[in-house]
Image (tube, rainbow, N blue to C red; front, side, top):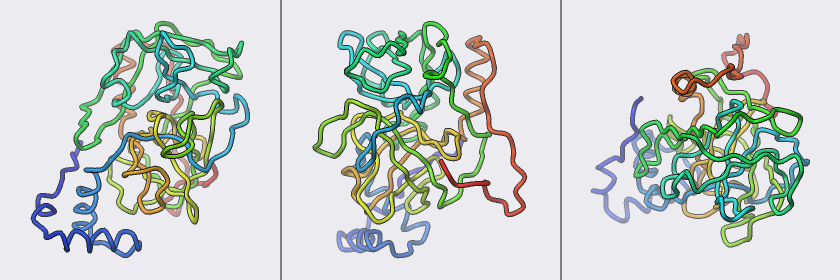
Length: 299
């Protein structure tokens, strides 16, 4: 896959030139591809691990049965990242979630809504193996992680697998999606007990081919600290993995960044075959669309 690189010319510009580019971005003025790449290189110096919900709402209990919570094994309820069940034995999350935490110290919880309550429908797992795909932490690229559970999950109304996109499936600007998780309610706000969700819109402003980017029009809302790895679902399909925000949560100036799941479907299939994962993935079927865009826009 093509790797996005920082633009060296960005660092040769005067401070006044860099400030001019930042001002254009804040005003959402048109940027050439070169200026957009330059701006993103400048901003990534302040990129912060992301992810969940500012300005959202409580999800209906157990209405998102594919959402996973990653917790420290010795501290039940100590949620630090999210994930998505994509196969009875595999959860998709963000690579940076386990960059500094050994997998044997992590518990994966499925079927949760209130993390501070021992719900009888919850299922708890340890991690058997983890699989990365050339993760580049300096550039925030390939921020995806496959977690193999110690046993298959029992699928039911509260625990279910999410549908994956087709390999390289496009996601047009303006598509309406749903972000969700248990992360902070603001940059300096506490974390919630119950699962939160938020309607967001796909944008291409400042985005990169490896990412899906979203904004919430006309208000301060978006993903925030403490729940990277959680899902972005568009038209019922898992299209993104929460990756990072620029500087702070819900700035209204910069989009939120997700790893683009459609780039990794073939890799996911390969990992499952090599790990001997039984069963098949749920992958979106091609849709006839004479306009060349994805049909529908509701999450």
